Image (tube, rainbow, N blue to C red; front, top):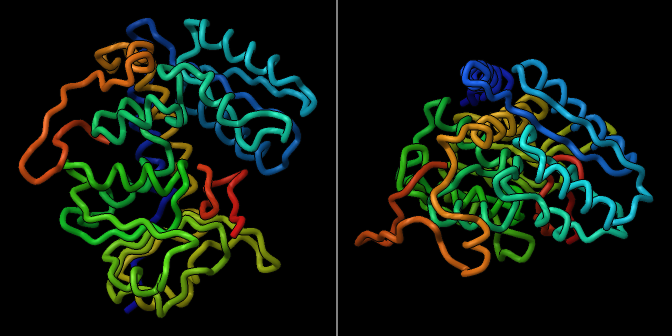
Length: 333
């Protein structure tokens, strides 16, 4: 068996085309979606990543505002900038690129971004809505992976999905997306991590295996169930160039479908970020209930329905030691 290659570039191009059309529709209604990117310091990978996002905004007709700050900037000065962006009605999405300098509290900075302008989907309010099955926006990489599966015709309903990596950026939100009672989900999900015993016993059960560990070739051929679909989130720089968390050459002889590195998950992350900005710019997509009220009361602003199998039948669709989801990802096992 030789696996079908899941072409992330081609699928991302489809998503961008849809985003371009949606952006044009909003412009006709007098709304030009706008993304403000905030980059602190001179991390080379972060600069490349943010530059790609800014270029992508221009290609789909969005406004983009660049805020490149010196690494020595005070934390309060960054918080003040975020407050200004939160108050600016022309800015619909805010993206603070990680990692931040060591003197800053990363979570405090991310929490300062308004939930209604949270292009990354990392704010606790948005993560909570995602877990409840009522997301406004979902973190871009997990949302992109879900689209790769759906648009490649890979069945998720009833599938055993094993996610290796438990980060807030990929692993946890990926699980939250795939367990929902809806199209492109309805999966049985297991999350593995650096403390999991007998990792191979888990991965061999997977109909869909998602690797987000941050270690080159950590998933080998014998760890993959024959016929499984394999999604490789990792981007690792080695003497051989960029490689994923999966041993691609070995895996493609066992799997039925697999994403390459590069050219698999990466292009989808940016495409879904753009889709998030369009959602945030569209008044008709605004959630019922106030994020501020939800924060004050610890509540869920949507209806609290359940059903007899313990699933949630609501809307669509880190940092930890096991995720490499782009610049700033890593593993500290």
